[in-house]
Length: 76
Image (cartoon, rainbow, N blue to C red):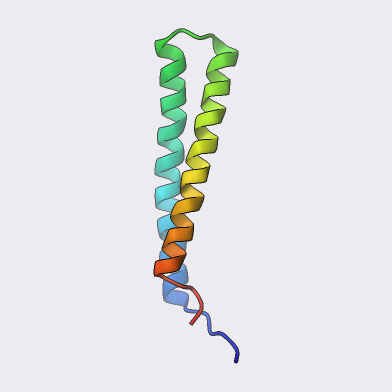
């Protein structure tokens, strides 16, 4: 039995992923930058904190997409 692509759900997941992904990654980048600047940790350490926070934001985005795919499957 061939599975059929549900274009409506695919468009919804893609749109929400872009929206949520940009928000989460932007907020995590800003948080890393703010923490480094607030505590005057220097450029390299601030960049490291920003990289860690971006990795955490990317992980959160992936987990969000996995949850969204459970609720709105793209294949019937």
